[in-house]
Length: 99
Image 1 (cartoon, one colour):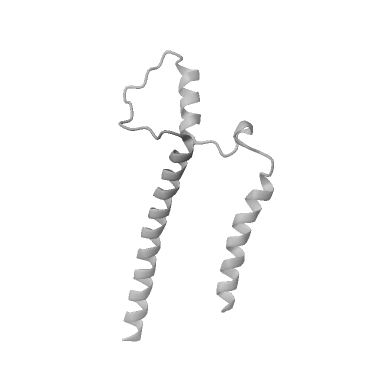
Image 2 (cartoon, rainbow, N blue to C red):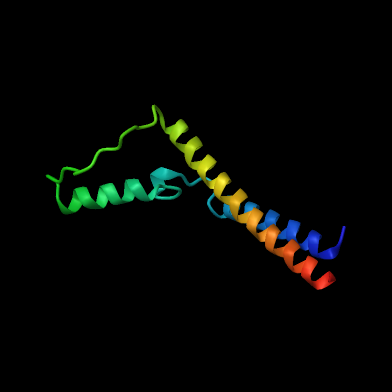
């Protein structure tokens, strides 16, 4: 394994572990890991308590867990698409440099 791969793996571990250590014991009640939708709804309610949304979603997930699952699935699909194009362009550049 090359040094750059080891450094990238070490970077991933640091990016994963450091936030867990920094925010250990904190949750949504403390204002951490809350969603932007909830924060926006709270701000709108504070500004105008009589506000009624002008649009309702066509379908709402039956639970918060399913909503989180769909969000994570959406993020994974986006990461796959971005990774595919990054890999495609890298292979294309290597192929051009070999010719």
